[in-house]
Length: 253
Ligand SMILES: [Zn+2]
Image 1 (tube, rainbow, N blue to C red):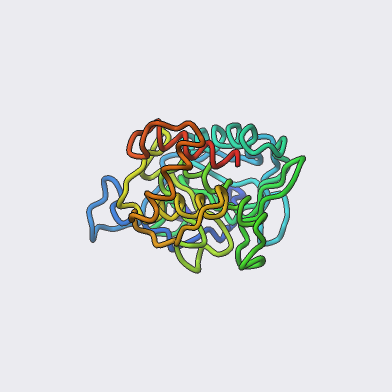
Image 2: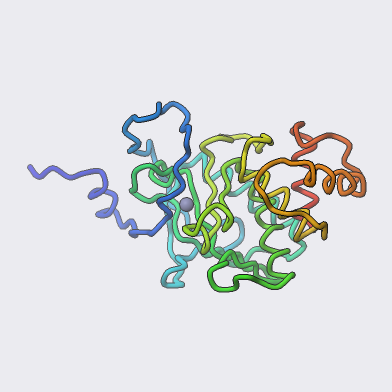
C-alpha cells in the first residue's frame, strides 16, 4: 500500500501551494526549545474562502482562492476583520489578497495554519495596500493607511511583521497568533516590532516628528505623551487597556 505524506494528502485534497513567508521565525516559539526541530504538523485545518465580508484571493495570480487555517486562528482573523471594518471608516471589506495562510514550510507558524500574509484589503470605500515593494517610499496617504491597518493587526496579533522588519515583508504584513493565542495583544517595551509600530503611528498617523529607531527611547516617550493626552488615553502602553486604546485610536486615524 502506498504511503502518503500528510503534505501529499493535503495536496490530493485540493490544497493550493501557496508562497507564504518563510522568514517569520519566532525566536521563542512557545513549547519549542531553541535548537529543537522547528517543523510541525497542524492538528486540524479548515478551508476558508472569505475573510470577514471579503472574498479571499491569492496575490500571486490575483485569483479568488480558498486557503486553509487552524480553526482557532481563523476565529481571531474573523474578529480582526469585524473590528477593522468598523474602525477603518472605509465600509465593508470586499476583497482580501494574501500570500497564504497554511503553508507547509518549517520554522514558520504558517505550517501550523496559524499565520496569514496580507497583501491588500479592498473595502467599499477604499483600498489599503501592504505592497511597500510597489509604492515605496509612498505618499502620506499610503503610509497613513498602511500604518492604520498595521495598528489594527497589532491589536489582534502580538506577532505582526511589517516592511520595517525585513525585505521579505516588503510585499505583505505577516500576522500569527504564536504569542497572543486567543487574546488581544499586549505591549512589551523590548519588542522591536511593537515599538516600530508606535513610532510609525506617531509619525505617519498622528503627525509627530519621530525617528523610527525600534527602541523605546526618550524621543518616542516625549512624542507619545501629548498624543495620548489628545486622545484621552490615561493608561500607559504597559497596561493592556492603554495599549489597546492607542491601537484602536491609531487604526481609526
Ligand atoms: Zn507570513
